[in-house]
Image (cartoon, rainbow, N blue to C red):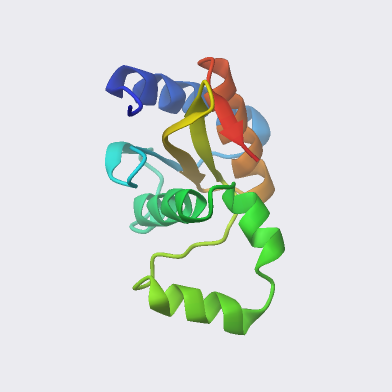
Length: 139
């Protein structure tokens, strides 16, 4: 089972609508399937070159450890550990808050991520967007 494109688009729509009220005006949203493949990627006009890549890295990191990237950020504080995992994953490990594993009825159906704001704010925006569509966001 994978997140539908319609649901991915609704998560992105909600996140983009919520972000300015939280002070985030430059952002990208990525929603993936359970394997970390992009279902939807969007960025606003102000976002730079790395927004989608950063959001995708956060989403894949959350899926790889089956927990939010905010949790990963708080766990992986040793620079050597971060460097080792980053090297082992070909640069794909991005332990910055803003991505969650998305579940439906306890089954992982994908990940959702934001890049653009402070990591804790990105985390709050994406959790709210996922929960607004009736799905669960693993913390």
